[in-house]
Image: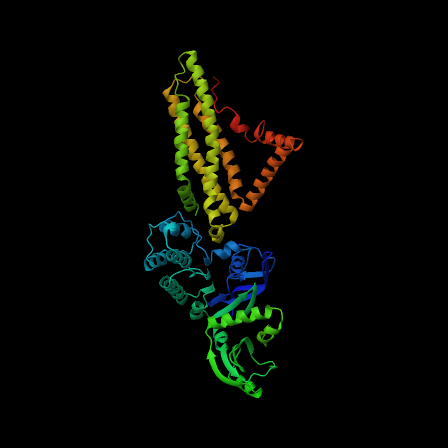
Length: 311
Length: 214
Protein backbone atom coordinates (compact mmCIF):
# COMPACT_ATOMS: atom_id res chain seq x y z
CA UNK A 1 0.00 0.00 0.00
CA UNK A 2 1.46 3.40 -0.95
CA UNK A 3 1.45 6.33 1.41
CA UNK A 4 0.14 9.76 0.52
CA UNK A 5 2.00 11.17 3.51
CA UNK A 6 5.05 9.59 5.06
CA UNK A 7 6.66 11.32 8.00
CA UNK A 8 9.60 9.89 9.85
CA UNK A 9 11.32 11.06 13.03
CA UNK A 10 10.01 14.60 12.77
CA UNK A 11 11.47 17.02 15.30
CA UNK A 12 10.50 20.65 15.59
CA UNK A 13 11.00 23.05 18.44
CA UNK A 14 8.56 25.94 18.31
CA UNK A 15 9.80 27.62 21.46
CA UNK A 16 10.76 26.89 25.05
CA UNK A 17 7.32 25.49 25.88
CA UNK A 18 6.59 23.21 22.96
CA UNK A 19 8.24 20.79 20.60
CA UNK A 20 7.33 17.91 18.31
CA UNK A 21 9.36 14.86 19.21
CA UNK A 22 9.95 11.96 16.84
CA UNK A 23 6.60 12.21 15.05
CA UNK A 24 6.22 9.42 12.49
CA UNK A 25 3.10 8.89 10.38
CA UNK A 26 2.14 6.86 7.33
CA UNK A 27 -1.13 7.95 5.72
CA UNK A 28 -2.28 5.31 3.21
CA UNK A 29 -3.33 6.63 -0.21
CA UNK A 30 -7.10 6.81 -0.51
CA UNK A 31 -7.75 6.72 3.23
CA UNK A 32 -9.49 9.21 5.47
CA UNK A 33 -6.95 9.69 8.19
CA UNK A 34 -7.91 11.34 11.45
CA UNK A 35 -5.32 13.31 13.34
CA UNK A 36 -6.57 13.61 16.89
CA UNK A 37 -5.21 15.48 19.82
CA UNK A 38 -6.14 17.98 22.50
CA UNK A 39 -5.63 21.69 21.91
CA UNK A 40 -1.94 22.55 21.89
CA UNK A 41 -0.82 18.99 21.17
CA UNK A 42 0.95 19.99 17.93
CA UNK A 43 -1.60 19.13 15.24
CA UNK A 44 -1.45 22.48 13.44
CA UNK A 45 2.34 22.61 13.72
CA UNK A 46 2.59 19.15 12.14
CA UNK A 47 0.28 20.24 9.32
CA UNK A 48 2.32 23.39 8.72
CA UNK A 49 5.42 21.23 8.48
CA UNK A 50 3.66 18.93 6.00
CA UNK A 51 2.80 21.92 3.80
CA UNK A 52 6.31 23.34 3.93
CA UNK A 53 5.28 26.44 5.90
CA UNK A 54 7.78 25.50 8.60
CA UNK A 55 11.11 23.72 8.39
CA UNK A 56 11.69 20.72 10.61
CA UNK A 57 14.76 20.54 12.83
CA UNK A 58 15.13 16.84 11.97
CA UNK A 59 13.25 14.06 10.20
CA UNK A 60 11.89 13.54 6.71
CA UNK A 61 8.56 14.41 5.11
CA UNK A 62 7.27 12.89 1.88
CA UNK A 63 3.91 14.11 0.59
CA UNK A 64 2.46 12.55 -2.58
CA UNK A 65 5.89 11.13 -3.31
CA UNK A 66 7.64 14.49 -3.13
CA UNK A 67 10.03 15.72 -0.51
CA UNK A 68 8.83 18.67 1.59
CA UNK A 69 9.82 21.48 1.96
CA UNK A 70 12.16 20.99 -1.05
CA UNK A 71 9.33 20.50 -3.56
CA UNK A 72 6.63 22.29 -1.58
CA UNK A 73 5.22 24.27 -4.54
CA UNK A 74 4.73 21.11 -6.62
CA UNK A 75 3.05 19.41 -3.67
CA UNK A 76 0.83 22.40 -2.86
CA UNK A 77 -0.57 22.32 -6.41
CA UNK A 78 -1.95 18.85 -5.62
CA UNK A 79 -3.23 19.60 -2.11
CA UNK A 80 -6.46 21.18 -0.97
CA UNK A 81 -5.87 22.86 2.38
CA UNK A 82 -8.42 24.15 4.84
CA UNK A 83 -6.65 25.85 7.75
CA UNK A 84 -7.78 26.12 11.33
CA UNK A 85 -8.51 29.84 11.09
CA UNK A 86 -10.00 31.59 8.06
CA UNK A 87 -7.05 32.86 6.04
CA UNK A 88 -8.68 34.37 2.97
CA UNK A 89 -8.55 38.06 2.09
CA UNK A 90 -11.46 39.62 3.98
CA UNK A 91 -11.91 42.52 1.57
CA UNK A 92 -12.78 40.30 -1.41
CA UNK A 93 -16.24 39.22 -2.43
CA UNK A 94 -17.02 35.52 -2.61
CA UNK A 95 -16.84 35.54 -6.44
CA UNK A 96 -13.52 37.39 -6.38
CA UNK A 97 -12.05 35.00 -3.81
CA UNK A 98 -13.07 32.04 -5.98
CA UNK A 99 -11.58 33.61 -9.13
CA UNK A 100 -8.39 34.54 -7.33
CA UNK A 101 -7.93 31.07 -5.89
CA UNK A 102 -8.81 29.34 -9.17
CA UNK A 103 -6.09 31.24 -11.03
CA UNK A 104 -3.40 29.33 -9.11
CA UNK A 105 -4.71 25.83 -9.91
CA UNK A 106 -4.63 24.34 -13.42
CA UNK A 107 -6.86 21.49 -12.21
CA UNK A 108 -9.59 23.90 -11.03
CA UNK A 109 -13.11 22.51 -11.58
CA UNK A 110 -15.34 25.55 -12.23
CA UNK A 111 -18.42 23.31 -12.53
CA UNK A 112 -17.85 21.77 -9.12
CA UNK A 113 -17.19 25.21 -7.63
CA UNK A 114 -20.51 26.51 -9.00
CA UNK A 115 -22.31 23.40 -7.78
CA UNK A 116 -20.86 23.71 -4.28
CA UNK A 117 -21.59 27.43 -4.20
CA UNK A 118 -25.24 26.62 -4.87
CA UNK A 119 -25.29 23.74 -2.40
CA UNK A 120 -23.69 25.87 0.32
CA UNK A 121 -25.95 28.85 -0.54
CA UNK A 122 -22.98 31.23 -0.78
CA UNK A 123 -23.88 34.62 -2.19
CA UNK A 124 -21.16 35.59 -4.68
CA UNK A 125 -21.58 39.30 -3.97
CA UNK A 126 -20.97 38.98 -0.23
CA UNK A 127 -17.76 40.44 1.16
CA UNK A 128 -15.75 37.79 3.02
CA UNK A 129 -15.37 39.87 6.17
CA UNK A 130 -19.18 39.89 6.48
CA UNK A 131 -19.59 36.13 6.16
CA UNK A 132 -20.48 34.09 9.21
CA UNK A 133 -18.01 31.53 10.50
CA UNK A 134 -20.12 28.76 8.97
CA UNK A 135 -20.19 30.46 5.56
CA UNK A 136 -16.42 31.00 5.66
CA UNK A 137 -15.91 27.35 6.55
CA UNK A 138 -18.06 26.32 3.59
CA UNK A 139 -16.20 28.69 1.26
CA UNK A 140 -12.84 27.28 2.34
CA UNK A 141 -14.12 23.76 1.75
CA UNK A 142 -15.45 24.83 -1.67
CA UNK A 143 -12.02 26.20 -2.62
CA UNK A 144 -10.20 23.11 -1.42
CA UNK A 145 -12.52 20.64 -3.15
CA UNK A 146 -12.77 22.54 -6.45
CA UNK A 147 -9.01 22.23 -6.90
CA UNK A 148 -9.67 18.50 -7.44
CA UNK A 149 -6.85 17.71 -5.05
CA UNK A 150 -5.20 14.34 -4.66
CA UNK A 151 -4.82 15.07 -0.97
CA UNK A 152 -7.04 17.14 1.29
CA UNK A 153 -5.44 18.52 4.43
CA UNK A 154 -8.10 19.80 6.78
CA UNK A 155 -7.13 21.45 10.04
CA UNK A 156 -10.15 21.56 12.35
CA UNK A 157 -12.42 22.25 9.36
CA UNK A 158 -15.63 22.25 11.37
CA UNK A 159 -14.39 23.94 14.52
CA UNK A 160 -16.84 26.60 15.63
CA UNK A 161 -19.47 25.70 13.02
CA UNK A 162 -23.07 25.12 14.02
CA UNK A 163 -24.33 21.52 13.63
CA UNK A 164 -26.12 22.25 10.33
CA UNK A 165 -23.06 23.84 8.73
CA UNK A 166 -20.86 21.06 10.12
CA UNK A 167 -23.08 18.42 8.55
CA UNK A 168 -23.04 20.20 5.18
CA UNK A 169 -19.26 20.52 5.17
CA UNK A 170 -18.69 16.89 6.17
CA UNK A 171 -21.27 15.65 3.64
CA UNK A 172 -19.50 17.52 0.85
CA UNK A 173 -16.23 16.01 1.99
CA UNK A 174 -17.55 12.46 2.13
CA UNK A 175 -19.24 12.84 -1.27
CA UNK A 176 -16.01 14.16 -2.78
CA UNK A 177 -14.00 11.25 -1.42
CA UNK A 178 -16.63 8.74 -2.56
CA UNK A 179 -16.38 10.01 -6.13
CA UNK A 180 -12.59 10.24 -6.32
CA UNK A 181 -9.65 8.38 -4.92
CA UNK A 182 -8.48 11.29 -2.84
CA UNK A 183 -6.71 10.98 0.49
CA UNK A 184 -7.98 13.04 3.38
CA UNK A 185 -5.86 14.06 6.34
CA UNK A 186 -8.19 15.65 8.86
CA UNK A 187 -7.20 17.03 12.22
CA UNK A 188 -9.72 17.65 14.93
CA UNK A 189 -10.33 17.57 18.63
CA UNK A 190 -13.99 16.77 17.91
CA UNK A 191 -13.47 13.05 18.17
CA UNK A 192 -17.04 11.88 17.58
CA UNK A 193 -16.96 13.68 14.25
CA UNK A 194 -13.94 11.74 13.00
CA UNK A 195 -15.31 8.48 14.32
CA UNK A 196 -17.98 8.51 11.61
CA UNK A 197 -15.70 9.15 8.65
CA UNK A 198 -12.13 8.02 9.35
CA UNK A 199 -10.45 4.74 8.39
CA UNK A 200 -7.40 5.27 10.53
CA UNK A 201 -6.36 7.64 13.30
CA UNK A 202 -3.24 8.93 14.95
CA UNK A 203 -3.45 10.47 18.41
CA UNK A 204 -1.02 13.22 19.21
CA UNK A 205 -0.36 14.45 22.73
CA UNK A 206 2.36 16.77 23.95
CA UNK A 207 4.11 16.72 20.58
CA UNK A 208 4.27 12.89 20.37
CA UNK A 209 2.19 10.32 18.53
CA UNK A 210 0.77 8.17 21.31
CA UNK A 211 -1.33 5.84 19.19
CA UNK A 212 -1.68 5.15 15.46
CA UNK A 213 -3.94 2.39 14.17
CA UNK A 214 -7.09 1.59 12.15
CA UNK A 215 -10.14 3.09 13.77
CA UNK A 216 -12.06 -0.20 13.99
CA UNK A 217 -9.20 -1.82 15.92
CA UNK A 218 -8.94 1.22 18.17
CA UNK A 219 -12.67 1.18 18.85
CA UNK A 220 -13.15 -2.57 19.16
CA UNK A 221 -10.34 -2.94 21.69
CA UNK A 222 -11.44 -0.07 23.91
CA UNK A 223 -13.80 -1.08 26.70
CA UNK A 224 -14.96 -0.02 30.09
CA UNK A 225 -14.86 -2.92 32.56
CA UNK A 226 -16.71 -3.03 35.83
CA UNK A 227 -14.77 -5.40 38.06
CA UNK A 228 -14.79 -6.49 41.68
CA UNK A 229 -12.37 -8.29 43.97
CA UNK A 230 -9.28 -6.62 42.56
CA UNK A 231 -6.24 -7.81 44.52
CA UNK A 232 -3.98 -5.28 46.19
CA UNK A 233 -1.01 -6.31 44.00
CA UNK A 234 -2.34 -6.56 40.47
CA UNK A 235 -0.20 -8.68 38.12
CA UNK A 236 0.54 -7.34 34.63
CA UNK A 237 -2.56 -7.91 32.49
CA UNK A 238 -2.53 -9.01 28.81
CA UNK A 239 -4.38 -5.79 27.90
CA UNK A 240 -3.66 -2.13 28.67
CA UNK A 241 -5.42 -0.47 31.57
CA UNK A 242 -5.81 3.18 30.70
CA UNK A 243 -7.65 4.41 33.78
CA UNK A 244 -8.79 2.87 37.08
CA UNK A 245 -11.58 4.42 39.12
CA UNK A 246 -12.47 3.14 42.55
CA UNK A 247 -16.23 2.95 42.99
CA UNK A 248 -17.07 1.15 46.24
CA UNK A 249 -14.78 -1.02 48.31
CA UNK A 250 -13.26 -3.69 46.10
CA UNK A 251 -15.14 -2.56 43.05
CA UNK A 252 -13.48 -0.64 40.24
CA UNK A 253 -14.14 0.68 36.75
CA UNK A 254 -11.34 0.31 34.25
CA UNK A 255 -10.95 1.87 30.82
CA UNK A 256 -8.88 -0.63 28.84
CA UNK A 257 -7.26 -0.89 25.43
CA UNK A 258 -6.52 -4.05 23.37
CA UNK A 259 -9.31 -5.96 25.14
CA UNK A 260 -10.26 -9.38 23.79
CA UNK A 261 -13.01 -11.69 25.03
CA UNK A 262 -10.54 -14.38 26.17
CA UNK A 263 -8.97 -11.89 28.57
CA UNK A 264 -11.92 -12.56 30.87
CA UNK A 265 -10.13 -15.81 31.80
CA UNK A 266 -7.12 -13.88 33.03
CA UNK A 267 -9.41 -11.90 35.31
CA UNK A 268 -10.92 -15.10 36.68
CA UNK A 269 -7.47 -16.62 37.25
CA UNK A 270 -6.58 -13.61 39.35
CA UNK A 271 -9.77 -13.72 41.39
CA UNK A 272 -11.31 -10.69 39.76
CA UNK A 273 -15.02 -10.74 39.00
CA UNK A 274 -15.98 -9.23 35.68
CA UNK A 275 -19.39 -7.62 36.18
CA UNK A 276 -19.84 -5.71 32.95
CA UNK A 277 -18.06 -4.94 29.65
CA UNK A 278 -19.13 -1.68 28.00
CA UNK A 279 -18.06 -0.52 24.53
CA UNK A 280 -16.30 2.83 24.52
CA UNK A 281 -16.86 5.15 21.65
CA UNK A 282 -13.82 6.85 20.16
CA UNK A 283 -14.28 10.00 22.20
CA UNK A 284 -14.42 8.11 25.50
CA UNK A 285 -11.43 6.03 24.45
CA UNK A 286 -9.56 9.14 23.41
CA UNK A 287 -10.21 10.82 26.74
CA UNK A 288 -9.16 7.68 28.64
CA UNK A 289 -5.97 7.45 26.60
CA UNK A 290 -5.06 11.05 27.35
CA UNK A 291 -5.95 10.64 31.05
CA UNK A 292 -3.69 7.60 31.27
CA UNK A 293 -0.79 9.60 29.81
CA UNK A 294 -1.45 12.43 32.25
CA UNK A 295 -1.41 10.01 35.21
CA UNK A 296 1.78 8.33 34.02
CA UNK A 297 3.43 11.71 33.67
CA UNK A 298 2.76 12.54 37.34
CA UNK A 299 5.40 11.82 39.99
CA UNK A 300 4.57 8.80 42.15
CA UNK A 301 2.83 9.39 45.48
CA UNK A 302 0.68 7.37 47.86
CA UNK A 303 -2.53 8.67 46.39
CA UNK A 304 -1.42 8.23 42.83
CA UNK A 305 -0.12 4.70 43.37
CA UNK A 306 -3.63 3.45 42.93
CA UNK A 307 -4.13 5.45 39.80
CA UNK A 308 -0.78 4.58 38.23
CA UNK A 309 -1.61 2.10 35.65
CA UNK A 310 -0.66 -1.37 34.65
CA UNK A 311 0.40 -1.50 31.03
CA UNK B 1 -2.41 34.39 -12.05
CA UNK B 2 -0.59 37.72 -12.22
CA UNK B 3 -3.77 39.33 -13.56
CA UNK B 4 -5.70 38.12 -10.50
CA UNK B 5 -2.97 39.27 -8.12
CA UNK B 6 -2.94 42.65 -9.86
CA UNK B 7 -6.70 42.90 -9.66
CA UNK B 8 -6.79 42.04 -5.96
CA UNK B 9 -3.98 44.46 -5.14
CA UNK B 10 -5.77 47.16 -7.15
CA UNK B 11 -8.79 46.65 -4.95
CA UNK B 12 -6.65 47.34 -1.87
CA UNK B 13 -4.73 50.24 -3.40
CA UNK B 14 -7.27 51.96 -5.62
CA UNK B 15 -8.39 54.72 -3.24
CA UNK B 16 -4.81 55.66 -2.45
CA UNK B 17 -3.91 55.66 -6.16
CA UNK B 18 -6.93 57.80 -7.01
CA UNK B 19 -6.29 60.28 -4.20
CA UNK B 20 -2.59 60.55 -5.03
CA UNK B 21 -3.42 61.00 -8.73
CA UNK B 22 -5.85 63.75 -7.86
CA UNK B 23 -3.24 65.37 -5.62
CA UNK B 24 -0.55 65.39 -8.33
CA UNK B 25 -3.02 66.88 -10.82
CA UNK B 26 -3.82 69.70 -8.40
CA UNK B 27 -0.16 70.36 -7.55
CA UNK B 28 0.99 70.16 -11.18
CA UNK B 29 -1.59 72.69 -12.36
CA UNK B 30 -1.42 74.94 -9.31
CA UNK B 31 2.40 75.09 -9.36
CA UNK B 32 2.66 76.83 -12.72
CA UNK B 33 -0.70 78.48 -13.14
CA UNK B 34 1.01 81.88 -13.23
CA UNK B 35 1.51 83.88 -16.40
CA UNK B 36 5.25 83.73 -17.04
CA UNK B 37 5.16 86.59 -19.55
CA UNK B 38 4.03 89.08 -16.95
CA UNK B 39 6.11 91.29 -14.76
CA UNK B 40 9.11 90.35 -12.63
CA UNK B 41 6.87 90.28 -9.53
CA UNK B 42 4.78 87.59 -11.17
CA UNK B 43 7.90 85.58 -11.93
CA UNK B 44 8.99 85.95 -8.32
CA UNK B 45 5.53 84.72 -7.26
CA UNK B 46 5.99 81.74 -9.54
CA UNK B 47 9.33 81.01 -7.90
CA UNK B 48 7.68 80.97 -4.49
CA UNK B 49 4.91 78.74 -5.75
CA UNK B 50 7.37 76.31 -7.29
CA UNK B 51 9.22 76.18 -3.98
CA UNK B 52 5.95 75.34 -2.23
CA UNK B 53 5.09 72.74 -4.86
CA UNK B 54 8.53 71.22 -4.33
CA UNK B 55 7.54 70.46 -0.74
CA UNK B 56 4.23 69.01 -1.85
CA UNK B 57 5.86 66.73 -4.41
CA UNK B 58 8.32 65.64 -1.75
CA UNK B 59 5.51 64.75 0.63
CA UNK B 60 3.44 63.02 -2.04
CA UNK B 61 6.38 60.85 -3.09
CA UNK B 62 6.96 59.66 0.49
CA UNK B 63 3.26 59.15 1.20
CA UNK B 64 2.76 57.41 -2.17
CA UNK B 65 5.66 55.01 -1.64
CA UNK B 66 4.45 54.24 1.87
CA UNK B 67 0.81 53.62 0.91
CA UNK B 68 1.55 51.49 -2.16
CA UNK B 69 3.95 49.29 -0.19
CA UNK B 70 1.52 49.07 2.72
CA UNK B 71 -1.33 47.91 0.47
CA UNK B 72 0.96 45.31 -1.10
CA UNK B 73 1.65 43.65 2.25
CA UNK B 74 -0.95 44.57 4.86
CA UNK B 75 -3.56 41.91 4.07
CA UNK B 76 -1.02 39.10 3.91
CA UNK B 77 0.43 40.24 7.24
CA UNK B 78 -3.06 40.26 8.76
CA UNK B 79 -3.52 36.61 7.74
CA UNK B 80 0.03 35.77 8.92
CA UNK B 81 0.80 34.79 5.30
CA UNK B 82 -0.94 31.44 5.72
CA UNK B 83 -2.95 31.87 2.52
CA UNK B 84 -0.03 33.12 0.46
CA UNK B 85 2.17 30.29 1.67
CA UNK B 86 -0.51 27.72 0.85
CA UNK B 87 -0.67 28.73 -2.79
CA UNK B 88 1.39 26.71 -5.26
CA UNK B 89 3.68 29.54 -6.30
CA UNK B 90 7.34 30.03 -5.36
CA UNK B 91 7.66 32.68 -2.71
CA UNK B 92 10.08 34.81 -4.73
CA UNK B 93 7.63 34.94 -7.63
CA UNK B 94 4.75 35.85 -5.32
CA UNK B 95 6.79 38.73 -3.88
CA UNK B 96 7.83 39.81 -7.39
CA UNK B 97 4.19 39.92 -8.55
CA UNK B 98 3.21 41.95 -5.50
CA UNK B 99 6.10 44.34 -6.14
CA UNK B 100 5.38 44.74 -9.85
CA UNK B 101 1.68 45.34 -9.16
CA UNK B 102 2.54 48.23 -6.83
CA UNK B 103 5.02 49.51 -9.38
CA UNK B 104 2.30 49.62 -12.03
CA UNK B 105 0.11 51.67 -9.71
CA UNK B 106 3.04 54.03 -9.09
CA UNK B 107 3.34 54.25 -12.89
CA UNK B 108 -0.32 55.27 -13.07
CA UNK B 109 0.31 58.15 -10.67
CA UNK B 110 3.35 59.26 -12.65
CA UNK B 111 1.42 59.03 -15.91
CA UNK B 112 -1.31 61.18 -14.39
CA UNK B 113 1.30 63.70 -13.29
CA UNK B 114 2.82 63.79 -16.78
CA UNK B 115 -0.60 64.42 -18.35
CA UNK B 116 -1.43 67.06 -15.74
CA UNK B 117 1.91 68.79 -16.34
CA UNK B 118 1.24 68.71 -20.09
CA UNK B 119 -2.16 70.33 -19.51
CA UNK B 120 -0.64 72.86 -17.10
CA UNK B 121 2.10 73.87 -19.53
CA UNK B 122 -0.43 74.17 -22.33
CA UNK B 123 -2.30 76.73 -20.21
CA UNK B 124 0.69 79.10 -20.04
CA UNK B 125 3.29 80.24 -22.44
CA UNK B 126 6.32 78.13 -21.63
CA UNK B 127 9.68 79.86 -22.09
CA UNK B 128 11.73 78.56 -25.02
CA UNK B 129 13.83 75.49 -24.22
CA UNK B 130 11.47 74.23 -21.49
CA UNK B 131 9.15 72.16 -23.63
CA UNK B 132 10.48 68.98 -21.99
CA UNK B 133 9.31 70.20 -18.57
CA UNK B 134 6.37 67.74 -18.14
CA UNK B 135 8.49 64.75 -19.14
CA UNK B 136 11.41 65.82 -16.97
CA UNK B 137 9.17 66.37 -13.96
CA UNK B 138 7.36 63.05 -14.46
CA UNK B 139 10.64 61.16 -14.85
CA UNK B 140 12.18 62.63 -11.72
CA UNK B 141 9.10 61.98 -9.63
CA UNK B 142 8.84 58.53 -11.16
CA UNK B 143 12.38 57.69 -10.04
CA UNK B 144 11.75 59.18 -6.60
CA UNK B 145 8.50 57.23 -6.20
CA UNK B 146 10.26 54.07 -7.31
CA UNK B 147 12.91 54.67 -4.64
CA UNK B 148 10.45 55.31 -1.79
CA UNK B 149 8.20 52.43 -2.89
CA UNK B 150 11.16 50.04 -2.99
CA UNK B 151 12.29 51.22 0.46
CA UNK B 152 8.86 50.85 2.06
CA UNK B 153 8.17 47.58 0.21
CA UNK B 154 11.29 46.14 1.85
CA UNK B 155 10.30 47.54 5.26
CA UNK B 156 6.71 46.29 5.02
CA UNK B 157 7.85 42.86 3.85
CA UNK B 158 9.68 42.30 7.11
CA UNK B 159 8.10 40.29 9.88
CA UNK B 160 6.78 42.21 12.90
CA UNK B 161 9.76 40.85 14.84
CA UNK B 162 12.20 42.42 12.36
CA UNK B 163 10.17 45.63 12.56
CA UNK B 164 10.51 45.61 16.34
CA UNK B 165 14.28 45.07 16.04
CA UNK B 166 14.66 47.99 13.63
CA UNK B 167 12.43 50.22 15.78
CA UNK B 168 14.32 49.11 18.90
CA UNK B 169 17.68 50.00 17.38
CA UNK B 170 16.40 53.40 16.30
CA UNK B 171 14.90 54.10 19.74
CA UNK B 172 18.16 52.98 21.38
CA UNK B 173 20.10 55.39 19.18
CA UNK B 174 17.76 58.24 20.01
CA UNK B 175 17.84 57.50 23.76
CA UNK B 176 21.64 57.15 23.84
CA UNK B 177 21.94 60.25 21.74
CA UNK B 178 19.74 62.27 24.09
CA UNK B 179 21.64 61.06 27.17
CA UNK B 180 25.12 61.49 25.73
CA UNK B 181 25.35 63.82 22.76
CA UNK B 182 28.99 62.85 22.13
CA UNK B 183 30.48 60.79 20.64
CA UNK B 184 27.47 58.49 19.91
CA UNK B 185 25.48 61.49 18.82
CA UNK B 186 28.05 62.27 16.24
CA UNK B 187 27.83 58.75 14.86
CA UNK B 188 24.08 59.06 14.62
CA UNK B 189 24.39 62.49 13.08
CA UNK B 190 26.92 61.24 10.53
CA UNK B 191 24.76 58.22 9.70
CA UNK B 192 21.68 60.29 9.16
CA UNK B 193 23.66 62.82 7.11
CA UNK B 194 25.00 60.04 4.89
CA UNK B 195 21.49 58.74 4.33
CA UNK B 196 19.61 61.97 4.04
CA UNK B 197 21.92 64.43 2.31
CA UNK B 198 24.83 64.70 -0.08
CA UNK B 199 24.66 61.64 -2.28
CA UNK B 200 22.38 59.86 0.18
CA UNK B 201 19.03 58.29 -0.41
CA UNK B 202 16.89 61.35 0.05
CA UNK B 203 18.98 63.52 -2.19
CA UNK B 204 16.78 62.50 -5.05
CA UNK B 205 13.87 64.05 -3.18
CA UNK B 206 15.59 67.16 -1.89
CA UNK B 207 16.83 68.29 -5.29
CA UNK B 208 14.64 70.65 -7.28
CA UNK B 209 11.79 68.93 -9.01
CA UNK B 210 11.73 71.43 -11.78
CA UNK B 211 14.06 72.03 -14.61
CA UNK B 212 12.79 75.64 -14.65
CA UNK B 213 15.34 77.87 -13.01
CA UNK B 214 13.34 80.94 -11.98
